[in-house]
Picture: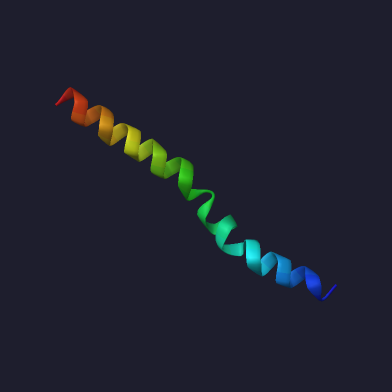
Length: 38
């Protein structure tokens, strides 16, 4: 049971970043499309 928190601590930054990635790509695509129209 002591190894479990260590494994979670390794994946914790990844889990924090994962929800941001789709939002970042959505904003990037929106800005790219807006730049293309302008």
